[in-house]
Structure formats: C-alpha cells, structure tokens
Image (cartoon, rainbow, N blue to C red; front, side, top):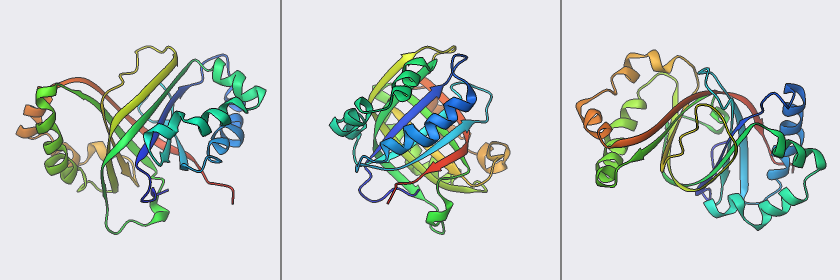
Length: 233
C-alpha cells in the first residue's frame, strides 16, 4: 500500500458504528461494499482499515491515498456516494459518528529497506496537532529535523508522513469530542509496543518541550491493521 508518486493527498475517515449497527453488518458493509466502491474512483489509489488498540473511540480508521485533497469529496466521489446501495446510504446515516478529512501531503520519510509488502503497516500512530501561528515554523523544523529522525530509530518503524488539513466534515457525535487539527503525522510500524521502547521515550527533548508550548490542540491515537482493500483489475 505504499502510495504511488502521484498520491499528493490523503482521505482520513474515523468511524464509530454505535449501538444501532451490529458488528456483523458494519464489517460486511464496509469490507464488501463501502470501501471497494470508493476504489472504483481512479484518483483513490488504495485503502486500509484499522482498529483502535488504545481503548479510545472512534474505534475505526480508514486511510485512502488519493491524488490530491480535492478528490476526497469531488464529483467522482459524489457520484459513487449517490449511486450507493440503500444499505450504504442507510448505514452512513445510522452510524453514531463519522469524521471525514482530506489532507495535503507535505512530508514522507520511509525506511530505505522497506518494500511494498511492508504496507499497509501492522500498526499506525497518528498525531493531530494544532499550532499557534507564531510557532509553526519552529514546529515544522523540529518535526522534520529532530522528531521524525528520532522516531525512525524505534524498532519496527517503517515510515513517517505529515499532512496539512484541507477539509473536514463530521456527522454525529462522540464523547470526548474528536479534535481536528491543521497538522497530521502518521507513523507506521511493523510491530507493537513502540511506545515503551527507549528510542521512543528519548523523543522527549528540550526542543520538543519548547515546541509543545505552542501546541493548542492535540489528538494522539494508536491503531492496528484490520483489512487492506485492493482495486479490482
């Protein structure tokens, strides 16, 4: 699932099915209908769905590599949505919480020895961060020059990507509320337990402490791979 070179965007979807949708129907719908339909859109290159391992909600995250942020809700996407089955429309309206975001890619650092077979990763850590305007330049410099290189030393690390928010839409509600921020970092790992490693704990540096003074919104989550979706040839 390594994104092709033309993938300049990301469609990021958080879902909490809620008590009005059974697990069996939710998974059958998403795996056999919802995600595959979106991969009929030429500018949606791949998809992978993940399940939370941090005990927080929303429980499910789907990531689609896309050509650019605008296609996440563009005409071809809208046509697929409008032509969806009655079940697709019913469940989209029934799930407790749905948050769809589109992002622009700004950074991609991949383990040189990683291969396509390593993706989608077994685990993802995402960090959504809102930064004061006066701190953005230092935040970006720190993330690219210190923070990501340090994370890349963690056993099982495969890739780190960063994005800037283009659009976000939410239906339903969840407690606590999901924090939607301008910046998103996604770190991919082949194995779990990364947060307990000495390498990950070492990222708490003086520079990080300074950067955190300008962070005004933060959402950090951990997920494991549930299913990869591939295009029908």
